[in-house]
Length: 116
Image (cartoon, rainbow, N blue to C red):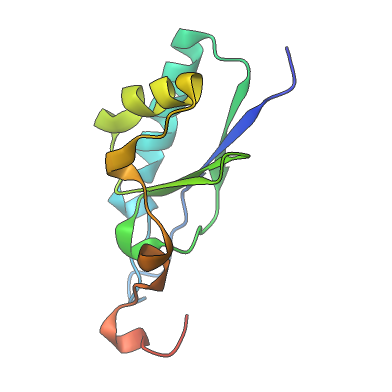
């Protein structure tokens, strides 16, 4: 098996239900992670490693995932997006409608105006 060229980190973080920031796992990131792994296997994409990760900080638009070394960030990812994501990993062209940037990292619930 060759060394991976790309790593896809999928947030599967789960917080206390009372926490003001949402948890990606509660928004379906576990299903997204599993679907990515299944699709990777179907496509025999040995150059990509799908990794279950902790919080990626853009919680308000989760499920969140990041592709490295491309530095491409996605938010609001669902299982239905998996084929497009896998196509993008092959082509190198990011999925535009899923991309997030600095603005999404700045989002906080009103009760957390000053920090995490």
